[in-house]
Amino acid sequence: MRLILGSGSPRRKEILASLGIVPDAIIAADVDETPQKGELPRPYCERVTRLKLDAIDAGPDDVVLTADTTVALGRRILGKPETAGQAAEFLLKLAGRRHTVITAVAVRKGARVWTRTSVSSVKMKRLSDDELNLYLASGEWQGKAGGYAIQGRGGAFIPWIEGSYTGIMGLPAMETAHLLNAAGIRGRL
Image (tube, rainbow, N blue to C red; front, side, top):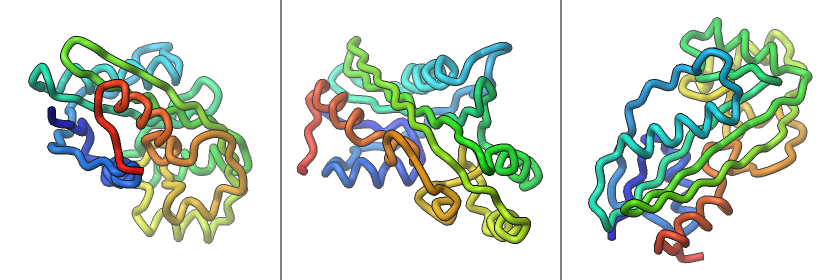
């Protein structure tokens, strides 16, 4: 039995390692992550996670793990910004407000599929022009849903969370351990 991590995210690999789990293979699923017209954040995140799961070829005894993280401001999905300008737009919308971070996780072994979704609330402080510009110059916003990384410099902007810190990072540890355990993968805690 092999564990295939269907993500190229170093954060997801680190979170698995913290659970005592090392994937046997890493295959980043290449799927269209464009939201459908009128799609709400949670169903969007769950759909993309399932698309990723379905995109990974595996043997009948292999376990495949995929996840997707979405930042939502109300009904609006804030994906991964394509430019520093878009990252600034996202960060200014989030600054001084609460938002939701949704991470959907899916595990497949043969024909069996297990899923869980972690929903966390996050408050971002108001950002000064200097803070915003220094953060944008760091490049940390690249490839991050909502344009920030809580585990990096972006953590200095977050005074409060309710939910899963690792879920906000991109892979909720408790839910992931539970799903992998159901599929026969156990870590060494």
